[in-house]
Length: 291
Image (cartoon, helix red, strand yellow):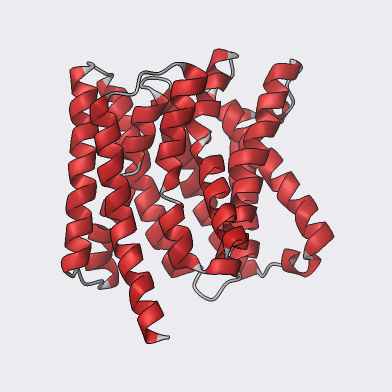
């Protein structure tokens, strides 16, 4: 149990580093397409190496899976581009907190599209997340942050929400690790076509090193640990501990980038995390009672 919880928290920290690493990449003169090409390209290569050593049989895809992965890869390309472009204009901490509005968007979209029902627990969770996002936006307006930057962050959140719903529909019955690898691979191919093959290799060691870190930490390592955690303790516990991600972003942005974290941001983050933990804790309690 303890090992699974550690995997969950480390995975969340790894995912939370995306925004901070992107900011560091901009400081080194890298563009968004170049960083994303390196992130998914190196991530795909590292996952491929892991599969070849540990679970080679999972590398055998069906034509149907490849078609689904190509579609999801295109959507992932759009979402990642919007997120990285937002980071050019607004702080990493604000971008991450705006992006974490997606649980509300997914829940609201799932009602008409997937026939999901909203109970009192879900409505309470939505209220907490919306209140948290309200504090984040209020803080952003007080600071006079870029309107286009906030719009790009909202766009990334909206595309990611649709992506999650589509994943639920398209990947039903598929092996999760195999599907994840091919989605990342297709996304890497898309960014390579966009940025050109020459953008994969950087002559400057610092830029190449950052690309390797992007491929390793928030991609290959984060995803591998996420699935190891789910395998050991189940998705309900993992969902709860994954809410550590925006906290990790806030802390890293303050420590590594020197971004000021306002009291409103901390309050907004606390409400967002409470809103995500609430339904998952209830689901876990119901499962425990049933067993």
